[in-house]
Amino acid sequence: MTHEELEESVPLYAAGALDRTERQTLEAHLLSGCASCHSALKDYQSVAALFPLGLSPTRPPRHLKAAIMSGRNPAPIPAEATPNEPARPSLEPGEWMNHLFPPIAPARSWSLPWAIGVATLLIVTVGGYLAWNAVAQRSEDTSNIQQLEASLQDKSSTLTKLQREIGDQATALTEARHELQERSHETAELKEQLAQREADLEEARVQLSQRSGARTGGTPQDELATLLRIPNVKVVSLTGSDMAKRAAGFLLYDARTQKVWLYSVNLPECPTGTIYQLWAMQTKPVSIGTFVMDRGDTAHLLVKKVANFTDAKTFSVSLEPSGGRPQPTGPMYLLSRS
Amino acid sequence: MDTPSRHATSTIDPSLLALVANGDQQAFSQLYDHSSSLLFTLAVRILGNHEEAAALLQDVYLEVWRKVSRYDVGRGTPVAWLVTLTRSRAIDRLRTRTARGSRATPSLEDGAAAQLDDQGPSPFETQTDQELRIAIGAAVAGLPQAQQQAIELAYYEGLSHAEIAARLNQPLGTVKTRIKLGMSKLRDGLQRWWNHGERL
Image (cartoon, rainbow over all chains, first blue to last red; front, side, top):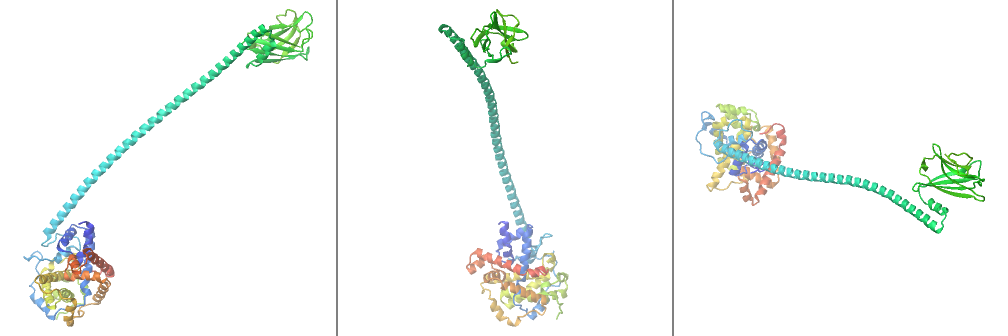
């Protein structure tokens, strides 16, 4: 029987409704020291002891007391001198009283050895069950811990794998960035090469144009028009000095061909025995070339090859004696801005 | 005739049993005066016969006289001990009689009708006894008839719950429940006496 069943049988016990086997089982349980059942039994036995008070009282016969007083032994029998008595089917009152409170000393009743035996059996049974239950619980706990550890290892393995994948992806991303940078550099180089190729192509076109111009009688103006379409051409403007305020001009320099193009307008006619001379003003004036403005000329185009054009700070055109001079000696007619 | 002191039956002093255990005849006489009416009423209720109840009571008191030293005040009140002893011996007699094929336990009405002359409260009954008698009577009367019947069959006729179920042709679980509920209600109904430390 479970403890709940035993506890529920307490009021039945107090009312006297249990059969012998059930009663002995509960008594063994009570002797085992169950405080809650003892307390419950105390309450219910107190109720049961009150039942006769609820009956209509009936007085005993008058002669009964005298019979009792005369029939008793000279003195009560001490508890230790228990005579041999026939076994009674009912519960001994002293034994019942033991159940009202936990036994203080070993009960002195004929059923004590049996009760102790039953109690011992119950204790052994309950102890065995508890031990078995503890072992089973420990086994179950161990199994659960092992499952948890296995699950933890799986999770750790998965996490490590994910971390490794993330690292691989980060490495791949870095490599992709490097490759992108390399591609960018290559693209820039390709662009430069493309520009160079375009310049070469344009030069080839110029040369082809010049050659075809020579063969077909083309003019420098055509070459100038071609030069104006080339990017990166250096341009220097020239203005007229007080000698020729209406004059103007500009220089074009093609670094690829190292050619200088001077296009001047409104320069006065060169007096006889004189020429115009173009100067590159470096640490000292360097002559680039000479040209002549005849009567009626309003513009002139001079083309010369200059190796160190970019070293010059300013340019100027002066009027010099025919044949030119190594240093400017005549008046300046065109001046570039510094 | 002995002159008893005015002690309630329900509150017999345990020291009285100690005096009896020492062979004090005066104390034994007082114990009889205070408890005999209650125990005789119980015996009559169980056995349904005055003569047999008287014979039972004689055996019970002689047993008390011989075994009173076994009584332990720490394990129950004197009245509870006496009531339990009387009920146990009465149920023994009842079963022995039933086994011999004698007639079944007479109804309470039969016994009551035959003993009308002896009915009435004991001259030793105190106001406390009367109040407690009223309280327990009200508590029992307040139970449903089925619960009251099941408890009475167990307590006064010594029937187990299985025997009660067979007698009433009711399921065993129903009988158990009736007894448990009835006992629980009685316990709660008598709480007032318990709270005043007047538990038997």
